[in-house]
Each structure stands twice: as C-alpha cells, then as structure tokens.
Amino acid sequence: MEKYKTRAEVPEKYKWDLTEYFKDEADFQRQFVQAEKMVAELSKYKKCTKDADRLYEFLQKELATNALVMDLNIYAIVVADQELGIASSIERKNKANTLYAEFSKNTNFFAPELLKLSDIEYQGLFQKSEKLLEFKEALDVIYREKKYILSESDETIITELVTSMNYFADMSATMLHSEHNYGTVTVDGEEEKIATNNYRVFLKNKDVNIRRKTYQQLNQKLDEYGKSCASYLNGYVRMNQTLAKIHHYKNAWDKKLFSLNCNDEVFRSLVNTVEDNLSVLHKYYRLREKVLGISLHPYDLNLNLNRNSSEYTIDDAQSLVREALRPLGEDYLEKYEKIIDNHYIDYCQYKGKCNGGYNISGFSKNSLILMSFNGDLTSVSTMAHECGHHIHRQFLKEYNKMQYSMIDTLLSEVASLTNECLLSNYISKNAKTKEEKLAGCENMISTIVSNLFGAVREGRLEEEMYQAVENNNTLTQEYLDQLTLDSLRKYYGDVVEIDSYAKNSWMMRSHYYMDFYLYSYAISISVASSVASSILSGDKEMLSRYIEFLKVGRDKWPIDAFKVLGIDLEDKKVYEDAIRYFDSLLDEYERIYDEEV
Image (cartoon, rainbow, N blue to C red; front, side, top):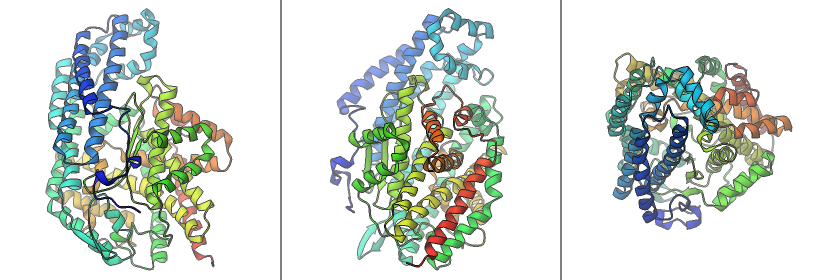
C-alpha cells in the first residue's frame, strides 16, 4: 500500500471535501461573522417563555444559530486534526470554541426561565400556539430538569469557567499524538518512525522483535509523562463530578442516567453478565496461544491469528463494504454511495494527523469521517463502522425535524457495529481460501473482544475513577497504574503474561474524556450482533424493525428506541446472547483452523 509522509502527498480523491461546510477560508470567516451576529441577537429573547409566539420565534433562531455554530466548530476541528499542532488551526479551533461558549452564554437564560413556569403555565403555551408543538418533546426534556437547572447568572458563570478550563482532552491528545518522539523501528530494512496512528500496525508484525521494540519504546516515553497524563485526567473527572453536584445531581453517573432517562439496572445487568462469563474471554486467549504457538504478552494481542496476507486498497475497501451491506436493502446502499461520491472520508495516514477514526456530525450538514487507513482488514472494518454512523445520520436527517435529528451515544454505536458484523460475515462466507475464512471470523471475534469485554473492563475503570474523586482522592499515576493492572489480571486471567508496561494502557484511552461513552459500545455490540444475525438468517421483520430503528430521533428516549427492535436492555438475555455468539465464533474459528487443507 502507498505510504505518505505528509498530507500534501495524499491524492485528492482520498481526502475529504470540506466545501459542503465552507467553500474556503474566506467563506468560513464570512459565516463566522454572521454567526457572531446571530449569537448576539439571541440574548434579546430574554423573558420569551411566557409568550408562545415569541418563544417559537426564539426556538427557531436558536436552532439555526446552533446549527451554524456547530458547523464552524466541526470545520475547525477537522482542519486541526488533518495536521495537529499547526498554529493557525489551533487559533481557528479556539476561536470557534469561544463562539460556541458565547452561544451557550447567550442562551443560558432560557432553561431557568422555562423552569420558573408552573405546570399550568407551561402546558398553556402549547394551547396558545399549535406550531409550538413541534418543539414540545425538546422542551419536555428541559422542563423535567426543573430541580437541576440553576439561575441564569449561575449558568453563565459555569459556562465561562468551563470554557476557560476544559482543555484537558486537547492537552492530552496533543502531547500523545503530536509532541512525543517515540523513536523508530526498522521494518523490512527501512527505518520508520513510531507514532500513535501507526504503532498498532507494528504490533501486528510477525517479527516478535519489532513488536516488542515498538511496545517498549512507546511505553518508555509514556512512562516519562505519566504524571502529566494523570493530572489531565484527574482535572477532567473532577470537573465533571463537580459540575454534576453543582447542578444537584448525586454525582456524574447520576447525571448520565438522568440524561438517558435510564435505570442503573441496565448497566449492572451488562457488567455483571460480562464479568460472570470471563471464562469465555479466557478461552479466547487460550485459542490465541494455540494458534500463534507462543506465550502471550500484551504486545502479542494485536497480532492477527490467521496467515491471511491480503492487503486492501482504498478502492478494495469501498467495494467490500458495499457488498457486505447489500442485505440492508437498496435505500441503505444508496446512502452508502453518497458517502463515496461526495468524498466525506479522509482516508490516509501520515505523521501529524490525528490518530484513529471518527464520524463527526452537526445539525445541518452531512457527517465527515476521519481514518488512518493502512491496508489491512481492520482498516476495512473501520470504514464499515464509520459509514454505519454516517448512514444512520442520513436516516435521522431525512426522517426527523432538525431539533430531533441528533441522538444519544447509547444508540449511535448500533448502526456502526451492525455494519462490522455484516462485513465479517461477508468476508467469511465469500472467502476463497481457508485463511480468508479465518480472517472474516477473526474480525468479528476481535470486534466483540474490544467492544464488549474491553469496553466493559474500561467502563468499570472509568466508574472507579469517578468514585475515587467523589471520595476526595486524586487520580495519580500510581493509582491509575494499579487500577489498570488489577483490571487486566482479572480479564486476562492466567493466560496473558502482564509486564511492567501493561499498566500504561489508560494513558492511550481518549474515551475517558467522553463521559461514560465506553458502555455504549458494550450495549451496542450486544444489540448489533443480535440484529445482524437475524437479518442474515433472512428475518425480514427484523430488517424492517432495524430500518425503522435507524429513523428514530431524539423525540424518543433510547430505551424506547431499543423497543422498536424488540429489545429490553434491563434483561440480561441480550448480553448473554452476545456472549454465546462470541463463544460460537471461537468454536467456529477453531473448527476451520483444525480442518485439513
């Protein structure tokens, strides 16, 4: 696969096209000025909540302003992520972030004003203005927070403080992905720089010396900055915990549950079911030992089990994903083609680009996808994953009013992980060789290991971090190291040999800056594996239910959206089914592996 040293070397067809957002920098600056005027105008609508017509006018303008401000922020974020550390990009991003803070400040009056209304006054608004009903579900969400919203002046102060303080995630990302020099490693006679967006590629190398050296060099550098990483994470968690309590929640977890209108039993059922079945995960690690013929170390866990040496071009990946998604129907495929035709994906990796993959969405424009494509099956799977997010967003925009077109993360991962399930099945079923069959099976196994077992393990760590801060403790490097080691011993069992560097894995997890996001993956892979297996078995009712699920907007709570699929998240059955499916995949892999060629 072609390798690129800089963004300038990447062909235009493999870069995202940002002109749907802004035609050029001049257009960005022109619309930024317009957004500033729109933001300033919002403060004139104070005391609008007792006048139904003026309230409707405010809500329309607030929505339009929010959409533009988000577009400005998204543009600033993606341009900055193209090449981290560029001064002009940092300045643009800070400028857009400041504008969003100003937007929040100028709308802070609204919730406190709305919540001052009595129930009779509140319900009366919808009797006076029928057109206001299109915002009712959104207003109901605010009104139920009556006891948690502070005065306008207090909310404004909090917004300004958070804006001036909340750079913990950015500082961590810049340090890890841009500032550190992790050294070099020699591969096939060529010296290559180790970076956070390529080190997993080196950890897949068959040469144990390359894997070990990459792992050790990266972790030696992490060790040097562990105290700083802990300080950033401690600041973020303490800020979240403090903000929750200022708003009269018990803690940040209580706030999360309230925001989802969700019972804690959902997450306890998830965690308990997974941790009661860790023997199946240990079975997976023993299978790795058998297939690889080695004693497992952390630097061996990214190594592919099978000997499939297939390398995929970006065009190959586009074709594979297209064929894998055919069971979802023509409408779904048309939405997939829109992604390719309109250049919504930035594929290629090079030093200085933000690591990993994501889909970023605003209210009004189509999503953008960032990748670090390196030609392996994982890259193809990442593409299927992020396209699932993008297509879900297209359905939401098409079938919902703008104010209901954004959904919670608890729902958003189902579409992406369902696509991964379908891709793995397609590769496995259409393989021409034993190695390709194993590759397809392994891809699904790895997806479940990461998104179910891995996400629950790290979600539990996140809960422990918040509990420690709630108990007036500080998240130090030593505490986080020990917390990680204890967790790994439990999940690795006696199969993986834990070394002195394994403790550093918490430093690389950006999801700890995303407010309990990890549990969403675990719930979603459980649901996705159920949905995908049903659709692939020819269950037309599930296919119909799934397409309807993709259309469900924010006017319904996540729990109610899952009921469209016929799934109750408090019932441990959905998690047990996912683990049984995982166990069957292990058996299937071993069966194929043991077959005579």
